[in-house]
Length: 140
Image 1 (cartoon, rainbow, N blue to C red):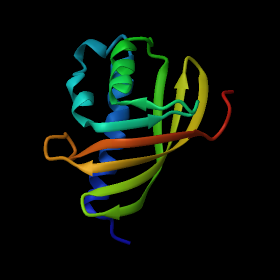
Image 2 (image 1 turned 180 degrees about the vertical axis):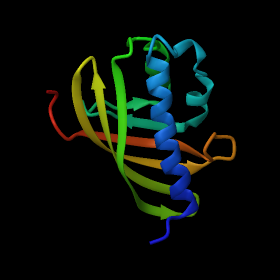
Image 3 (image 1 turned 60 degrees about the horizontal axis):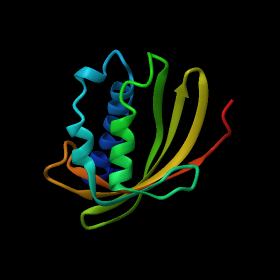
Protein backbone atom coordinates (compact mmCIF):
# COMPACT_ATOMS: atom_id res chain seq x y z
CA UNK A 1 0.00 0.00 0.00
CA UNK A 2 1.43 3.38 -0.94
CA UNK A 3 1.86 6.07 1.65
CA UNK A 4 0.71 9.62 1.05
CA UNK A 5 3.27 12.41 0.86
CA UNK A 6 1.56 14.05 3.84
CA UNK A 7 1.94 10.88 5.93
CA UNK A 8 5.62 10.60 4.98
CA UNK A 9 6.23 14.21 6.10
CA UNK A 10 4.34 13.61 9.37
CA UNK A 11 6.24 10.37 10.04
CA UNK A 12 9.55 12.11 9.40
CA UNK A 13 8.49 14.94 11.72
CA UNK A 14 7.65 12.52 14.54
CA UNK A 15 11.08 10.90 14.30
CA UNK A 16 12.91 14.24 13.91
CA UNK A 17 11.15 15.88 16.84
CA UNK A 18 12.00 13.02 19.16
CA UNK A 19 15.63 13.17 18.03
CA UNK A 20 15.50 16.86 18.96
CA UNK A 21 14.19 15.97 22.45
CA UNK A 22 17.04 13.55 23.09
CA UNK A 23 19.61 16.17 22.00
CA UNK A 24 17.91 19.07 23.83
CA UNK A 25 17.52 17.21 27.12
CA UNK A 26 21.09 15.84 27.20
CA UNK A 27 23.79 17.94 28.88
CA UNK A 28 26.37 16.82 26.32
CA UNK A 29 24.40 18.01 23.27
CA UNK A 30 21.99 20.70 24.51
CA UNK A 31 24.29 23.64 23.68
CA UNK A 32 24.52 22.58 20.04
CA UNK A 33 20.76 21.99 19.67
CA UNK A 34 18.62 24.70 18.10
CA UNK A 35 15.41 25.33 20.08
CA UNK A 36 13.89 27.22 17.14
CA UNK A 37 13.41 23.87 15.42
CA UNK A 38 10.93 22.90 18.15
CA UNK A 39 9.24 26.29 18.28
CA UNK A 40 8.62 26.25 14.50
CA UNK A 41 6.70 22.97 14.53
CA UNK A 42 4.34 23.74 17.40
CA UNK A 43 1.44 25.17 15.43
CA UNK A 44 -1.03 27.81 16.57
CA UNK A 45 -3.64 26.37 18.88
CA UNK A 46 -1.44 23.36 19.68
CA UNK A 47 -2.92 21.23 22.44
CA UNK A 48 -1.19 18.33 24.20
CA UNK A 49 -2.74 15.78 26.49
CA UNK A 50 0.10 13.85 28.16
CA UNK A 51 -0.50 10.47 29.83
CA UNK A 52 -1.34 12.13 33.16
CA UNK A 53 -4.47 13.63 31.56
CA UNK A 54 -3.56 17.31 31.88
CA UNK A 55 -4.32 19.63 28.97
CA UNK A 56 -1.40 21.79 27.90
CA UNK A 57 -1.69 24.64 25.42
CA UNK A 58 1.09 25.64 23.06
CA UNK A 59 2.68 28.08 25.52
CA UNK A 60 2.79 25.46 28.28
CA UNK A 61 4.32 22.84 25.98
CA UNK A 62 6.97 25.23 24.66
CA UNK A 63 7.81 26.47 28.17
CA UNK A 64 8.08 22.93 29.54
CA UNK A 65 10.48 21.84 26.82
CA UNK A 66 12.55 25.05 27.06
CA UNK A 67 12.80 24.79 30.87
CA UNK A 68 13.95 21.16 30.87
CA UNK A 69 17.01 21.71 28.68
CA UNK A 70 20.06 19.63 29.67
CA UNK A 71 18.30 17.76 32.48
CA UNK A 72 19.81 14.38 31.59
CA UNK A 73 23.37 13.14 31.44
CA UNK A 74 23.44 10.54 28.65
CA UNK A 75 20.69 8.62 30.43
CA UNK A 76 17.70 9.49 28.25
CA UNK A 77 16.61 7.74 25.07
CA UNK A 78 13.53 7.57 22.87
CA UNK A 79 12.51 4.94 20.34
CA UNK A 80 9.62 5.58 17.93
CA UNK A 81 7.76 2.57 16.52
CA UNK A 82 4.61 1.56 14.68
CA UNK A 83 4.00 4.91 12.96
CA UNK A 84 0.62 4.47 11.26
CA UNK A 85 -1.50 6.82 9.15
CA UNK A 86 -5.04 7.50 10.28
CA UNK A 87 -7.61 9.96 9.03
CA UNK A 88 -6.40 12.30 6.28
CA UNK A 89 -8.23 15.13 4.52
CA UNK A 90 -6.84 18.02 2.52
CA UNK A 91 -3.80 19.38 4.34
CA UNK A 92 -4.40 17.51 7.63
CA UNK A 93 -3.56 14.03 8.88
CA UNK A 94 -3.86 12.05 12.11
CA UNK A 95 -0.96 9.70 12.78
CA UNK A 96 -0.52 7.18 15.60
CA UNK A 97 2.77 5.88 16.95
CA UNK A 98 4.40 4.23 19.95
CA UNK A 99 7.00 6.14 21.93
CA UNK A 100 9.33 4.14 24.17
CA UNK A 101 11.41 6.16 26.60
CA UNK A 102 14.22 5.28 28.95
CA UNK A 103 14.95 7.88 31.63
CA UNK A 104 17.75 7.12 34.05
CA UNK A 105 17.13 3.40 33.58
CA UNK A 106 13.32 3.57 33.92
CA UNK A 107 11.49 2.38 30.81
CA UNK A 108 8.01 3.49 29.76
CA UNK A 109 5.88 3.16 26.66
CA UNK A 110 3.03 5.31 25.44
CA UNK A 111 0.78 5.29 22.42
CA UNK A 112 0.22 8.65 20.82
CA UNK A 113 -2.12 10.11 18.25
CA UNK A 114 -1.17 13.38 16.64
CA UNK A 115 -2.87 15.79 14.27
CA UNK A 116 -0.60 17.48 11.75
CA UNK A 117 -1.31 20.35 9.36
CA UNK A 118 0.84 21.20 6.37
CA UNK A 119 3.15 24.17 6.88
CA UNK A 120 5.69 25.35 4.33
CA UNK A 121 7.75 27.01 7.10
CA UNK A 122 8.15 23.84 9.21
CA UNK A 123 11.30 21.70 8.78
CA UNK A 124 9.39 18.63 7.53
CA UNK A 125 6.50 20.54 5.99
CA UNK A 126 4.02 19.85 8.80
CA UNK A 127 3.30 21.32 12.21
CA UNK A 128 1.82 19.71 15.32
CA UNK A 129 -1.70 20.85 16.25
CA UNK A 130 -2.89 18.17 18.67
CA UNK A 131 -1.13 15.38 20.56
CA UNK A 132 -2.74 12.83 22.88
CA UNK A 133 -0.58 10.27 24.71
CA UNK A 134 -1.75 7.24 26.71
CA UNK A 135 0.37 4.95 28.89
CA UNK A 136 0.80 1.45 27.49
CA UNK A 137 2.48 0.24 30.65
CA UNK A 138 3.45 1.49 34.05
CA UNK A 139 7.06 2.44 34.74
CA UNK A 140 9.27 -0.55 35.52
